[in-house]
Image (tube, rainbow, N blue to C red; front, side, top):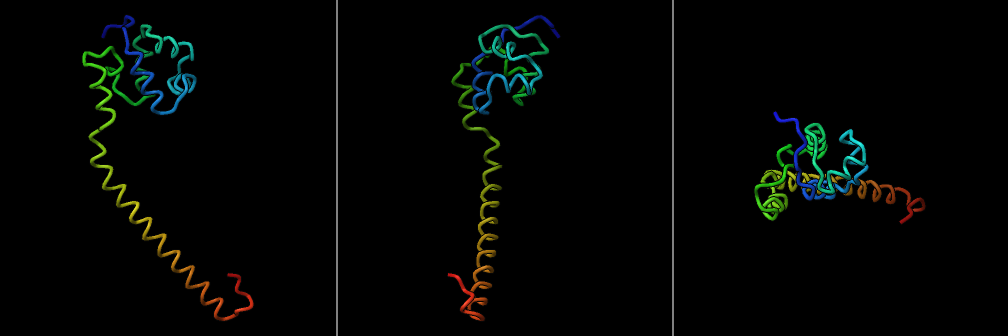
Length: 128
């Protein structure tokens, strides 16, 4: 593999970093790079192979995605807005929320019944 510095897509790095709500300093810490290196990468500089690999690992993307794209930028942003994995996650998320609501209803009902029984036994102690 060629070890010479290569031109990277600085806008893609910035977009991925900002999508996570990370500062340049945070990305540098996660990637094990200096903040100045991240600043140079986002300013459109060239990246050594190791720097590109470290940033790709920190951002959880394939290293090739950080190279200057052969595809137009709007195609990359469209794929980020509508990832395929959401089709698998949404039903599980809905099932989780349904289970959470069911559990919350059961707990709330049990607490209400316990409170009602306590108030029926000793109305003086009841603080409604």
